[in-house]
Image (cartoon, rainbow, N blue to C red; front, side, top):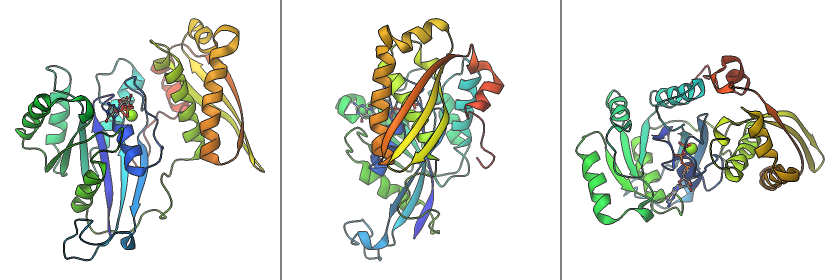
Length: 313
Ligand SMILES: Nc1nc2c(ncn2[C@@H]2O[C@H](COP(=O)(O)OP(=O)(O)OP(=O)(O)O)[C@@H](O)[C@H]2O)c(=O)[nH]1
Ligand SMILES: [Mg+2]
């Protein structure tokens, strides 16, 4: 069997989390139209058992099909940080470039001068790890722009392969996975075949709630939001969850709650429905909103919310 670790990296909002979900065929990572959605590296496990595919169809040629297990790491968008949270995010994305078997570098448009692209290319240049360039959102890129993007990155000589894809509808996603399989070594199955992530349910639940906050609120409020699960109780056919939505200002608290509590109700309902399909149980979800000023620059708050480097990262 082929197995290995694959980092998905790139600037914010290029579609990294959407690509991870498309690869897995399941939603593990939250995605939103707002940049800097992903804050922690999110692990997704892709398993293709040997007996699943024929040889020719899988591009395996005359060799028997061995199957593969790939652990994808969806990383925060690499950006110039404005607070300690941003520093944590960018540092953990850069850290995830080492110690893996393949790097998928995602872009969604032409590189803009001074936009940090050169910085990422320098980091990529520092590692021997095979890299694949993925030009995402081809549904929005015209042929001329696509060619310019392609030529620009090909000229760097950094990439073993270049793919265009549309993570949003799965276009070419299978081809990318096959190309990755070819680049990873022979290895063991690290995780059981039916496991799609090793993150605890609490983490996934807090992320779903944060995603709904991102979805329901515009402007600067969502960036200062963190979600903490206070209680999580599994009863027969029912999961009771209590969570706190933290924001940075009193005015933000008012916006999150909304007129007559309508906004918070909408967020709660959308989150509950998704958590119910994740747990396969009824969910009783209670949400509170609290203010924690400038938590994004507080080491204590950051570690409390789980924005700390994992020991084995
Ligand atoms: N049109 C189009 N939109 C896409 C595609 N892939 C992702 N998107 C959209 O792009 C936005 C950002 O997607 P994410 O997956 O959250 O991007 P990300 O790179 O993980 O972003 P960060 O976590 O903030 O770094 C979302 O609104 C997605 O729906 C695509 O193939 N085509
Ligand atoms: Mg993301």
